[in-house]
Image (cartoon, rainbow, N blue to C red):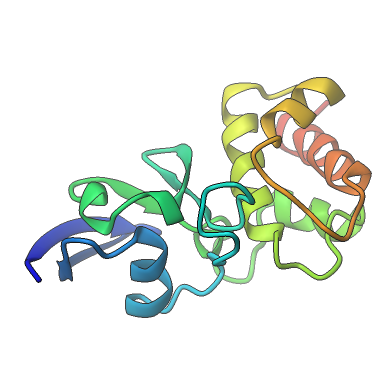
Length: 158
């Protein structure tokens, strides 16, 4: 199996790593870099549990190869906060009941971050549309929507 050296920045840290050509980005993040916040769910791009940001845009890491991240910047859920200071999205999910079992939460956080970077004050309909690529089996979604609304208010003073 052929291998490639990739140069990728993950959560602000530069890495030069040799990876097999067919290594999924999700597996690279979880198994090679030990960033286990990125979850393996459906492995078909349906559930969104593996969502990360590449150059600021949300992608499903189970549908991307690690080599596709060469020269790019990847942010995982571990990279949202700064040390022990959680990102407003993370605190809002805790305060507003946007999580239960937590398995889908990292993917929702990354999708919500992408949404709020493009639309700082989304309507409920826009939030639901922005998160439509993510599935949750526990919450019923209203807590997730409320969490994103609350984070938008915290982040943008509304």
